Image (cartoon, rainbow, N blue to C red):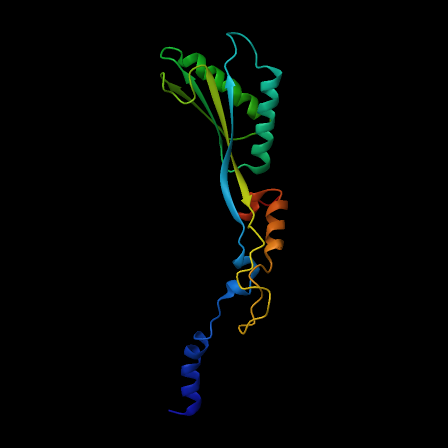
Length: 184
């Protein structure tokens, strides 16, 4: 076998042994932006029979709808609590809340009724749960390796952290960090 063939055969093995740990050199890997799914939750008291939603409740629903449209991570859940025999009234109240959310532009709203004294939410109330994405910024200011150069020619341990922190704090829709939006 010729020496050139031996070198060519061994070169992938030799180059594979030189693989570097990129987390020291790439600030996006060293300080990742985490995206968490959280929920904005509001409780609404059921108005008396025949009464409409109060202006304050409509305003709260409007803010929840805006949050769903801005940072939504899934369908909005509307759950009403009911005593046994009052499922129809609780369901009608939950449907009123769902219709109000749809009027504000929310497309996906799931409605449910929980029955019993231990129901969540309690009887006579309704819970609106809006799942939202939230970006968690990395904590900066740690200098594990110090600021002085070392023999590995790696940057200091806090290098690039402020860039990633600023991205996490400024992102308008954290869902963009998880998945791409539909094209328009």
